[in-house]
Image (cartoon, rainbow, N blue to C red):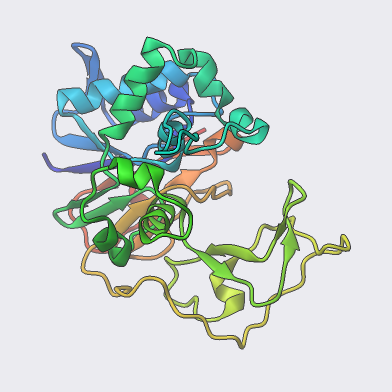
Length: 305
């Protein structure tokens, strides 16, 4: 194999996935897409939202089974496992609220909740590693964070990780790796598009220059104050500690999850690239074609609408 083709969040857009694979030279042979010289890597979030839930899952699983792809666990697959799992006191690990069911409806509708097919896919999700430390390359769904990996002990998803209580080290580790770190806004708050007041925001962990509250906090562009005014700039003189201790990494890291937007996908910097470019929001399905380079480059991105 000459390299890896790392594919961002698919969210059930099977047609776009097949077009992306075709554009990179993959062909369906004996039931699985294959490339004569390269291996695909899925960042997951294969499910929820899009119209091709089962076809997306079948494509990815067939490739993994055939050895033409590897895969890491995404937060949507983790949520699916938690939705279908009860903890030790009999409660669902992901509460069956109307909001959570709505987010999960496309997958549940496609497989039939609590059906044999549903249980089979949950078992497959449970087998997926939470990160891949490949020769020369690191792959994770949301954030590469070695302290969290140390807390978990291995990349395998365990029942303890699924049933962990909020506030425990195991719970926090899964949240950081699969959903990304959050930063306290130090007394500031904003209202998101769903009307929820937030006093924490996602942290730009991939950005070496994000050393202040203003540069580190990822605030949605449509955020408002509680009085309905546009959310003002955060202070640029409040220092923030990086959650990632190894910014000068010896290998690049590829990740998804963050719903980037724009007409032309691009990398974050020479050692980090988000490959989630909002396919479910009318954006792109994106892959990065890595062939051993230590510095990432925009020229190696491939995108389809």
